[in-house]
Length: 324
Image 1 (cartoon, one colour):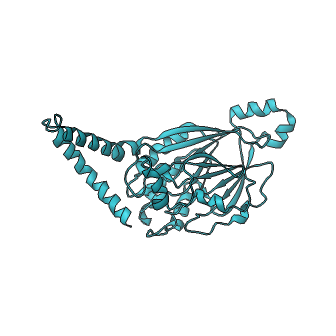
Image 2 (cartoon, helix red, strand yellow):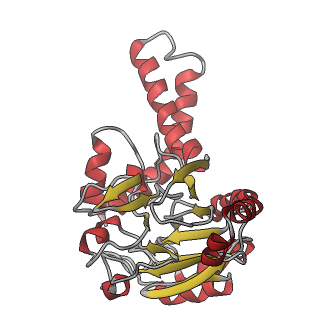
Image 3 (spheres, rainbow, N blue to C red):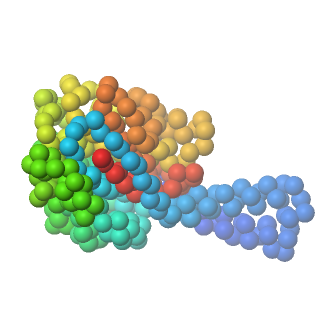
């Protein structure tokens, strides 16, 4: 609650910084004084972290080679921690949707936290842009969607809205799907021979998606991930990477998580404290691809902001996993 109050104060105070910067520069009051120059640079960095970087969506591509045989090439796009609400507005979501459609992924996965202090009666209006996504979308909910700390649990309304947008929420559920191969995948299958075609299926790559409910606010059903090895590509979707430490087995091919924001304000060593005291994480998962007990774990740094209205050295990101 205290952090939220500080964040809201910083959100509105930031507009005053613009006027203060104008005062320092015009009529060149601070340009010939060391303190004035320092204040100008500090203001510029503050305004960059507040207004510019949070609106710069980067696309990061990651090639992931799995040990399982006969997996057709697959392109999975990941967005997370959208946090529409106090600080992140729906125009950023509209920009992300446009970029996602331009990537033409085989599958889009969203590991939670669609909202942050977003009134329940605004959820449908502010998230309606998600219905424009042109690829299959599956999601789980995050701690802020499910009533973390002092926030209201909006999971019911949110699930209803996401369903209207064509997004399948798979908290504690398993979905078995087949993705029609992209052109480059068809070439792979044709060259691979009949045996691999029969295993992979020329009509699509078999994928078993297992969604786990939020580790912080719910009790995930870990029984879903016992003995899941098989010919399909097995992917676990969960919000908080700390949940990985609780898994009863590690037969899955890939785990996809969010929650960390990559620290959001990535100034060493302060961002490490953000994991412990803001994200309330007990483990050392950060961002990017990790290896844990023989299983690949991918953590995305997400799109939006929570806690403080800043992103610095950690811009919003759409991660594209090229599975092979």
